[in-house]
Every structure is written in C-alpha cells, then in structure tokens.
Image 1 (cartoon, rainbow, N blue to C red):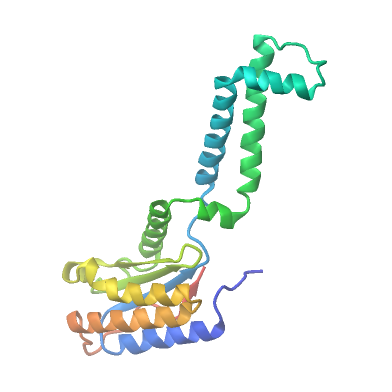
Image 2 (cartoon, rainbow, N blue to C red):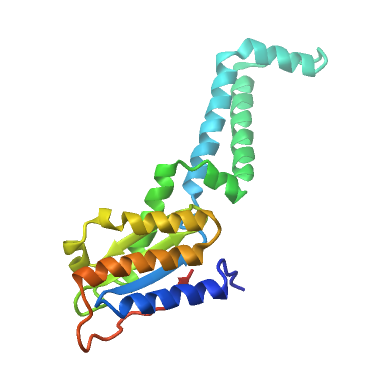
Length: 226
C-alpha cells in the first residue's frame, strides 16, 4: 500500500493554486512531490569502504600494538601470528568493518545525513530532469510546460522549464518562488509552500506568456505524488 507524505488538503491547495495561476497564462505548471529522490546506495558503499580501509590501515601501521592486544586478549596463550595469518586477520577486520558500517547505514536517515549536500542537490536535480522529460517536455503546443519538483527528505526543490519558457526566463528568476517553497517545506507545510511557489511562478509566466483565447489545458493541474 502506498504511503502518502502529504495530506488531501495539501493536494487540494496545490491543485487549486495551479488552476488559478493558469487562468492568467498559457504556461502549464506541473507539480510533483516525492518522499526522496534517491536511495544513495553508492554513498553507503563509499562510507563502508572508507571505514574498512581506515581500519585495515591503522592495523597495518601499528602491528606491534595489535599483536600485543591479541596476546593479552588470549590470556598469554596466543602464539605469534605468521605473516599469512596476520594478513588474513587484517582482511577479516576490514570485511567485518565494511559489513558493520553497511548494516548501520541501512538506516536511511543516517545515510541521507552522511550524504554531502552537493550530492543531494545533484540527485534531486537529476530526478527533476528525468520527470520533466517524461511528463512535461514537449507536451504543450507552445513548449510552455514547467515542472515544480519537491523532494521532502532532502528538503530540496527544483524547477525545470520547457524551451519556450527557458528562452525568456532566466533560472535565477525562479529564486523567489524556490525560497518561499523551501521555507514552508522545512516548517512542515509542503502544500502551502508549493501553492505559494506556484502563485509566484504564475506571476512570472503571465508576464511572458499571457493567456490567449482558446488555449487548452494540456497538462494536469493536480499534485502528483510519487
């Protein structure tokens, strides 16, 4: 069963905001919200590998200390390890460290927290572009579609515009809408944030692409939740 991350009221607020904005422009606004944009499995792999490598390196750099530790833990009954046995021990420690870190990072909030901000931003952007290409790009006669994408757990959003809009509106123009959106998302009000962003996007679109007679509604107004 699919778990919803926004309320029905949020869906209604955003859908109404899109419909109102499009009353004044030929631009077509598509809104999409997702819990998370990526699993960041590769980040967990990197962290596990780095920690395992560090553990193995420390043992290799201070062999006398760890051999002494082994001797004390064995109650003085342990024999001196051969080179092959010592190598096997180092590898075993590395493998155990790798598995341990990987298991810890199965807890996704920690995995996300350990993911650098730049990587999170890049993954959200990539996901937004993928969704734009599937559901918005070249889906209107005038190439006036625009996607507003929100990724909740990353606390990030992105706007991707079709070529007619991109030719007239610089990406920096959407900064005000994005700022209003992110503030509300961080406050736990994603629906209100998206509605406010849509309102501000609509003002910009109405300036450059005012409503013309007979322009059809070519893309859905409803909030799409992934």
